[in-house]
Length: 153
Image (cartoon, rainbow, N blue to C red; front, side, top):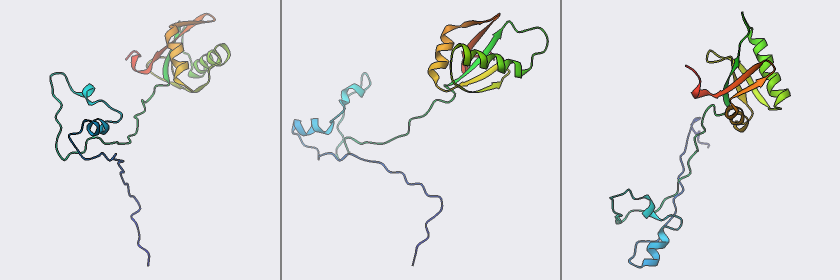
């Protein structure tokens, strides 16, 4: 006889470090904080209070939050040609600049209202390098890269 398990089940598992029972011996109390000195974490003006029957130290595994769009930049072309310019032409200029001049790998170029295009780089280092340079000359124009959250709104 088999038991059917629910289709969607999520179990949270916490790994807790076992600590020796509290004693007045100084060595045992110091061993409870094997990798951390609690005095650094006490706010100014507060005191450390040992609570009886409470676990002294615990260990929890958590997921690090990934910052979104840290590889995305807004590119602006100065001066823009007179008249209407298609996005295909902007895409060609930006991709030629990144591939042939700087040899930078990018993932995507998209149209935006904040500048001429969004550029998603393969890594954030290339994006940061271009942002720090400011206006970069390319032929008779210059390209400026800014972070996504620092573009003109």
